[in-house]
View 1 (cartoon, rainbow, N blue to C red):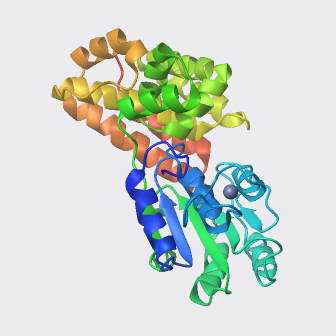
View 2 (spheres, helix red, strand yellow; view 1 turned 180 degrees about the vertical axis):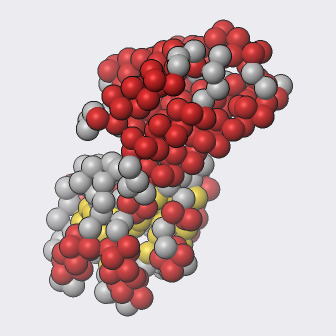
Amino acid sequence: MNWGILGHEWAVQLLHEQLVQGRSKQAYLFTGPPGVGRRTLALAMAQALNCLQPLAPATPCLTCRTCQQFKTMKHPDLSVIQADQVGGVLKVEQIREMQHRLALAPYDARFKIALLLRFEEAHASAANALLKTLEEPPSRVILLLTAQDSESVLPTIASRCEVIRLRPLPYAQVEAGLQTGWEIPAEQANLLGHISGGRPGYALRLSRNEDLLEQRRGWLDDLSKLLSAKRVARFAYAETVTKDKYLPLADLLQTWLTYWRDVLLLTTGADSPLANIDRQAEIEQLASRINLQTVRKVIQAAEHTLQLLSKNVNARLAMEVFMLDLPYL
Ligand SMILES: [Zn+2]
């Protein structure tokens, strides 16, 4: 019984207990890094609330029509609200439209579900509009929000939600889960468990799309080149990657961040496993040439840039500033 989810057993158990005891809240905020499983868990909760033939109380069958429709986000009682693209803006009109839909009784399900994804991207007016719904939620409606962390949404919103903080899983757990649940061969499961940084959703995305693995390789190669590149070349790179509307900048930074965290592990002599096991030799080499303070500075800069990007700042400017924070080797 883990609602068909890889990891996060504590969260499933907590939500399951609440549902069984009829103590579920009207709003939940699932936080954690992208690909960790926030949306998957929210949808599993929607299944547990609405499954037509549960295996046990609050234990969805995962196969009935309702379970399938929630899984694929095509259930008529599910409203999915999100910015038009990652890094975009969730607008107040979208919240208003959702409120009209939630005012009607469920069409088919026991509970209407509003799934508000990446809520850190909500415009202030949208967040304020949602507050009204959180203060006086319609009956038979459950609001499920996802965000990077609870600090990235208005405190008045976070305080009205039960916050479920999802953290990356141990690499070995992702690796084992990919093999048993998704029949991914051992060697690939090992690599994906590591390079996903313990984020099962991201690991599965990588397993289904060879292009993403290729893209990751390219980004890490770019990083190596940038470290020995002059400022002009670095700014040119910042321009290129921010001009491309289809390039997921946050993914690029997240990839670089896992790389720098590996450098940090080696610099501090921690014996935790590296994420980028396929680049171990070059990470060792980098760690031997760089001091701890510099590594920490780059990590902070990358985290800060990621936060800025989620708040709709000028992406090119943010990337240029980050380029200056990279050491020159
Ligand atoms: Zn079902």
